[in-house]
Image 1 (cartoon, rainbow, N blue to C red):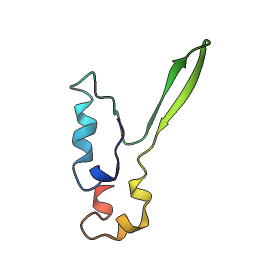
Image 2 (cartoon, one colour):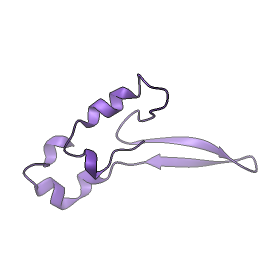
Image 3 (cartoon, rainbow, N blue to C red):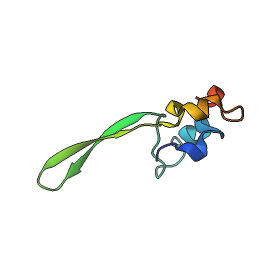
Image 4 (cartoon, helix red, strand yellow):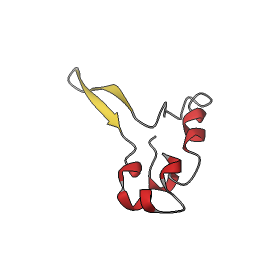
Length: 69
């Protein structure tokens, strides 16, 4: 799971907190990484980034603004 623009005006922290309650919901923070095994005995680093706060129009929007960051 990762936050997106549809979460920007909601309660982002509630979704992060839900990770502690559900083993199927993996979102320990707004930004995180994890290493996954892939075929051939190799691994890949997955980086999860919440980019909505970097959208200039969101930061200027009265409804969404920086309060959600």
